[in-house]
Amino acid sequence: MEKIKKALEQAKKERDANLGQPVETTKQAPTAHIAREDQITYTQTQKFTASPDVLSNNRIIIGSENSEIVAAYKMLRTQLLQKLNDNQWNALAMTSPSAGAGCSLTSINLAISLAMEVRHTVLLVDFNLRSPGLHKLFGFQPKFGLSDYLLHDTPLEEILVNPGYEGVVMLPGSQPLLNSSETLSSPKLVQLVEELKNRYPSRIVLFDLPPILTSDDALAFSPYTDAFLLVLEEGKTKKAELENSMHLLKDVEVIGTVINKSKEIKAG
Image (cartoon, one colour):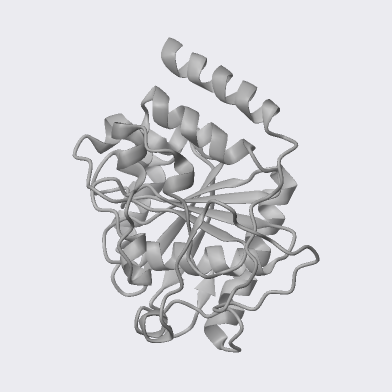
């Protein structure tokens, strides 16, 4: 606990020293056309633009399209922003009771939708340390990932990627980490989380976590996020799984649920 306390104090000092720095931005977004008052430029963040076919095949929203799915994510975005703003939160963890619910896809589409709200930028973090996969949905393999930062001190600016959507930056995973739950509560990672949460006041941070019932990773990380959003799979997530998940998160703020793979798109 003493190591974690020192890490938090160090992160606060670094945050205070960086408050005057500009928010990260990009010159153009060929994938998503979002009108922002200030033009954004990425100077160090890598940029990758997925092909439209990859995005379509993996059900990632384009951003400019007009569809029921985009409308549903905008509704979810509005509900979340109200709760985040009311509580002055900016860090949201995404998880599901079990695998296959589509938590990672929901995290990506929610990040894109949140970035359409021009007062915010979004940092999407792959914290599924045992099986990182956000980058796979965009169809690219990062040179470096979170494990390189944790194990080899690779600078964050060499890891962060803009996936072609203005206002969205991704911290991808790379090599799996078997001691994932211990890593998620380690002083180095706690300090990183505090830096990610506090460096830019207008930034929302989404942490994509593994299912809560398959490992203790999500629970180990729970003290370091403001709230959780549970992703459920219609017709597959059992009532007992939801009850068990809520019991494990009984001491954590659960901001709501998303019913995924539904014929009728729902959020609550």
